Length: 95
Image 1: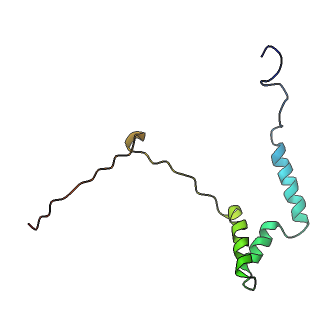
Image 2 (image 1 turned 180 degrees about the vertical axis):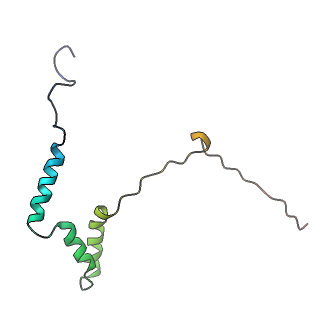
Image 3 (image 1 turned 45 degrees about the vertical axis):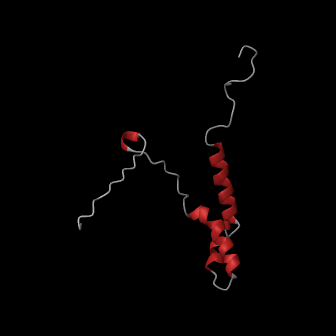
């Protein structure tokens, strides 16, 4: 733009790797303190003396860290075109 506002500016924005470095430092600091949150949730989940509701809540909270979410799938027909549904009827051969 001619007024100097908006658009890409040299040196602007987050530096490459900055968020990753902070996450690694936070994880290391949390690990120094002992039990990590995921470890705690899994210990509650596996403790059969805990009430079922507490174990279920721990399972729900821990699941995203252990299992990937399924991606949605878009189905298509041949060569990426629309799907074609073909209904074939067979004549009754007993008559």
